[in-house]
Amino acid sequence: MPSQAGRKGKVFLVLFGSLLGLGLCGIFGLAIFGAPWTPRWLDTGVPPDRLSEGIPFPITLSDRSGRIYPLILVRTGEQIRAFPMQPPGISCLLKIEGPVLVAECAGCRFAADGRPLAGPCASPLPTYPARIMGGSIWIDINRLP
Image (tube, rainbow, N blue to C red; front, side, top):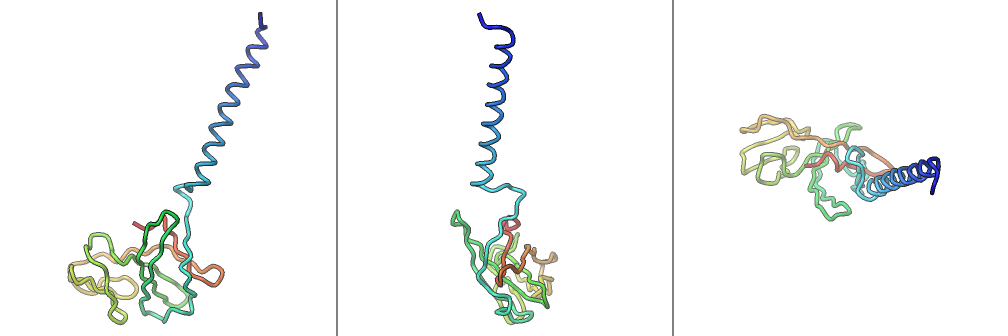
């Protein structure tokens, strides 16, 4: 007949092993799928000097899952802005007309900095985090719709 101390030791080992297993599963899951609070940056492959000051530059990115992100990049001084090519609430893609972004289906016009210029669209375009790393522009895809 096992002693009381022997039973407590077995219970401890089972509980400790279970917690360790759950922790390792959690770490493994975060490593594969990424933590929802962790930015997932995608390299655009576009060097910042390729963008002309205030002129929209269209690009299309895709992540590891194959999801496609059509974007517009705009450089203003040292700042890079990234806008979705299809803004929330607008059913068509933005067209670039010089320094102006046009949503013909909604009758909206936006400045290169995302401000609404004309039409029923009163909100500015959403801007997603962009940074320059290793001579290329990177976009945080966690912030994309």
